[in-house]
Length: 188
Image 1: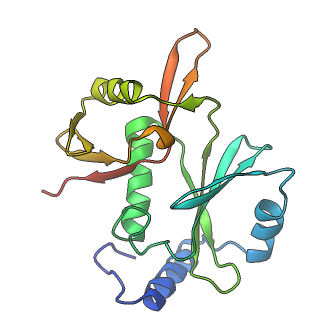
Image 2: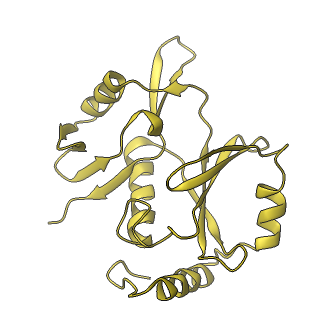
């Protein structure tokens, strides 16, 4: 599935996403997903439901499990132009900020649009302040312009309080941890 093969309709996008999942070995069984993630609130309580994802905490792995909303995966509403853009954004976030976002698979629940399932480490902390976010980004060579951060090759948007955590470290300092940013490479 290539980024320039954007489907013309929601049905075509769903078929393309399902084909990608099958070709890549990322199909998740709906019954298993529902039983192990959605239906087990004691083991995996729902943490949030935002504009892009529903989020659960997995106590066994100390990771959060994020499920894109069924009408949003791959159609540009998850902040990128298509599924490939969404997956590239996750990969760039891993590279730039040493995150550990993993594509867990694709699941279709109740005949809805296929949904992307990712996971990433749980961070215990608080929403970072605007000055903490600015310092973090500037230390990494980014400059703010037009509501996004740029370093000459990459643009980072959505670096706001509800997408960036701050946490205490063992040495008593504070670390900033972005967890839900939109990252894209600049076109040549």
